[in-house]
Image 1 (spheres, rainbow, N blue to C red):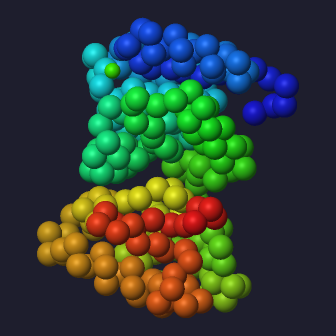
Image 2 (tube, protein in one colour):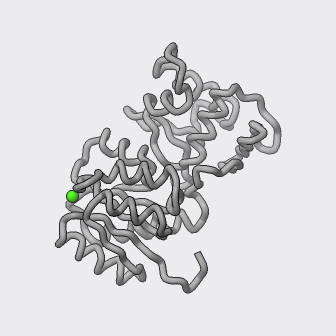
Length: 239
Ligand code: CA
């Protein structure tokens, strides 16, 4: 994003009063705001127009926010745009579902304007620093670890290490979405997609092997973190 250019936000929310309040505060923060109240129309707009921020209500007419987010991440002009999901549901599984759809953060209704704008500032700052890796990135650097997906090479503190296919794919997936929690079921589906003979314990076993290979102290990991009761995430630097 060029300095001095106007930042564009897409605000997708079907509650008019809330949408107007959000639009007002995004405007104060310097965003040019485009509004949609329907999931399908929002997705059409997202296919062609690149935004600097998307605020996405979960419960929408047409197509829900999770469907919109998955679709925008899968191709088009906004595969790497920061997305904040707005949800009325505060359940843990709903939270994980929102983040696994490719959202960068979420906020639960009812929320205060200051909380909303703090989330917006955080995701756009993280994005500007380049932490929101686009889906087609092939090289990653996290902590002491460097990964090259095309060559399938991994180095830790400058020294090459041997990883199995599953170890590499799991590490790359977590490292490409730093700070985002993945459930064991989701990791199984994405890393072991066609293998029916694995269980969620397989994920735990591969994580512990990876920790022995990449962490300074495998018993006190600083990179591959456990999200208790949910799954795993790669530290995003603020943990
Ligand atoms: Ca709604």
